Image (cartoon, rainbow over all chains, first blue to last red; front, side):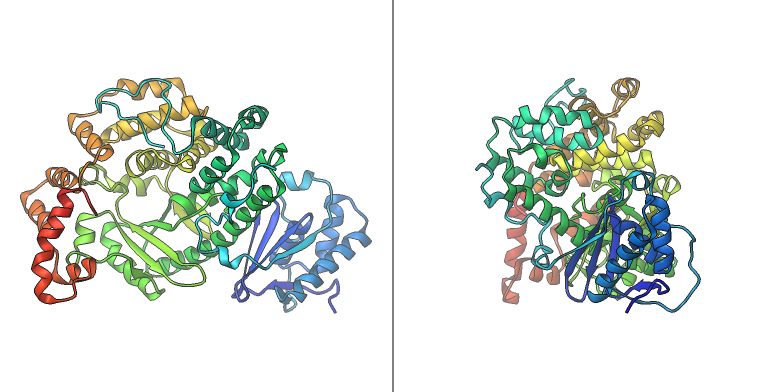
Length: 144
Length: 398
């Protein structure tokens, strides 16, 4: 079971991730499943990538969004458990964090706190051959 | 959408409307949606622009113009008239584009790492550089392929590095070495979860006239450091980027593609204030690209509200293209038959020796190339395919 003392790391060879417009997009290359993490997930994911422990991430989250520590810790642990359950991250060896604070853009820091939410999309692989992937756009009824 | 055909020595008419696959009303709506990303006030005009449109036709244009991911993040889905299924489709397109582009960028990072290890410098061009460096969100900007610029002397070593990563030549050579001698890029591809097409360039404009006039070293000297796909990379400097995109849009795409227009509008919005417009105009004139740069920037200022200073447009208008540029641009924008393009390319070459090699390359390709290109089944039939090739060229067939 994950605790606040743990540090996680992305499964580097098989998982690709990028923060785009405040949303984390994560792809498991072994399964083709696409994940989106929104809300405060970008800050938490950034903390994981930067090598912070879950406790350090929760503390930084509480400071940044001025929320209660207990709430921040619960949200961080819940998201971490979901990421681990999907096999996107594994527990890292204990190591000093590379940075002491969550990196954030000015826009992100100014936003109100929104709970992190992990969503998976399991039907995207067939769209990869298209440029751009435009699933049946012209076949939909554009007027109701 | 195509640029209007103007006499090559005349400036384009002020305020001309660009031709497009979209109807004028559809183009107005799509342009306003794209502009709203940079200018939120544009969103106010959208409901009126949307009111009388045939939305089914609009959907086809959105797909054809590769705009669905950008439209998902525009004010359009929130306007109301779009059924939820359409808004959901735009969102799915955005997400699938994110997925595809992340995989392409991952491969690009591997290519850049391997090239750097081999001591080969590369500049990231077009889609990847724009998606990461200009749009700052790779999910927004579709990337058909990856484009890298290397120095001409390093094409073969770069090709070997990329071959070791699994890239294969996408197009047969008429003779060994002919592509490097006469073209400006090699098309490579790699199979996988997503097929990766990679264009390896050593010159930026596909025209012998421009390859003679363009000192490629200027693009290297003005290149900038950037992070692409999470890896350190180099991209074109601001003036070089605008010059290349304008020339690419006007000469390679014939002015078609709202996405390409929007790319330049995005670059100008991001970098226009710091651009050295005098340098841009001078280089455009030196490189024989004055006409396309003038056409594109004038249209962007009028149709897209792009921040092109009036003084810069005046400067471009007042400069005179050389007679050779006017002729070369006219041929590129009205290529006619393949035979006409062949003769114009031949005329632009600096020496008879080069012309002879170029003529041999196209008129008498190697038997191996002919067998692959035309699927010749019996060796005795091979001689018949040479006149067949010449006839197709004369008729403008590929």
